[in-house]
Length: 614
Image 1 (cartoon, rainbow, N blue to C red):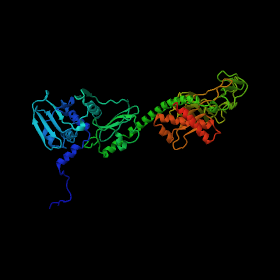
Image 2 (image 1 turned 90 degrees about the vertical axis):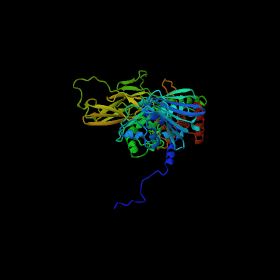
Image 3 (image 1 turned 60 degrees about the vertical axis):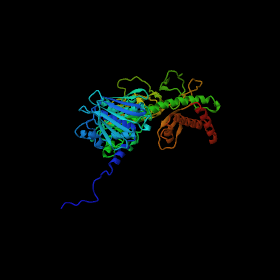
Image 4 (image 1 turned 30 degrees about the horizontal axis):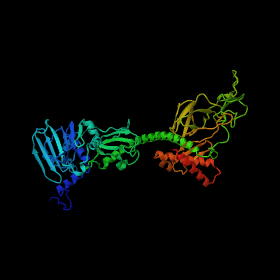
């Protein structure tokens, strides 16, 4: 006996075929997408020339699409096989370059107009016409007199257009097709022209060209399901910069960030535009402007991991360069605004951080006397502060020279020869450097008795960040040139003798200067007077916004603070924020004895006149 059927199990079936067709026809909610599908049918038919005509005849608006491609041989199959496209069968037979596969493209005319007439000359030379009417299950096929001079071709007419579609002008169709069918037009070589009779314009649809700079050497995005093609550009920040997701040259999703997996940096950056063409995505049949989020899609997200890392690096580098330019501009604007503010404020109340003492000339000292380092010092007997006569004890910018005594052969003591490498330092170990300025550094290697070690060693230099450039990566002496961005840079030197390597570090604080050093003294040397420079220190999570470093005479701004991050989203807001921090620090230092009420009054006063001139 056969197995008894389960009455509660079976196969799904369509209960009302016409209702299913109606649902399919109305699922396309974008009339421009419908027009793009009709054009794609022409491209699939190997058309070389495609015309889209928008006009009005006997008071009725219409859209007409004419091509010179391979005609349609079996209209009856088209009308009676909804959801069973001929293209799907051709793909199974090995045909490539075909886009449609659902057999429902023609039904999208319901979202454009009331009736469709499709006229085509098949391979046998007979011209036939198929007529479909919206909300009507019937179809009609008739033979007509020869319509085209060529033996093949197709004409599609939709008329009358729906009320809301009548203002669909030619330029809007042109722009949409240029993006939607960008690669399909390029690869097929088809010429698409739009004749807008209402506007009296003829437009050529050219594949969209991205305005940014092409990103070369993108990582390969391999996937076992098929090919992934990436064409991405870096452009100036704009909300218009989007990465589109394509399949076989046809745009599926205009903005990839609408997918949750890509709704994050760097994909959400407004710096990158372009296309990612994925051959194996499963489209949503109704609208064909969405994808199925299945395991194939999941494999795509994994394949793009390397690309995500590359784009992250590119976006960070661009923003860093942008911040350098913005900082330079902010510096100039604050400088100008502060100068203007000083014209309105009482000079006797704003000493602007005049510090005690004078800048003393740098000297080169020997055991036989004192010589000026720059040749301008009078060479007096007064010793400058903090200068030691012991070789190696002073790590400042002054250089200590030992007494020069002619040597005689055999006079050198055994203890004058250096022993094995024991320690090393960079001189200077800490320095403040203005943006765009240069500074020389020396590596000093010593043995256990602090005797200089000069032979048999190798020196290699590195820098931790990218706030400047080194003149060389090897050698005892190097020069560091700061970039345009303030910040804290760290130099490292690695000294090697035989199997021993010693590491030492120097810290460079790069500052932006507003006015530089102003004022003077009787001996002609400048005093430290005027507005200080500023630098950034990235301290996320810490509550301080800015601090005044009195020893180095700079304002340190925490560019990791939430307020700075918020202000940096807009250059005008960032400019005002930094100006407020300047006002705060200058008032706190310039009025150390004032109570909090007076400090707040001074801050308001300074901000008022400064921001007036920003």
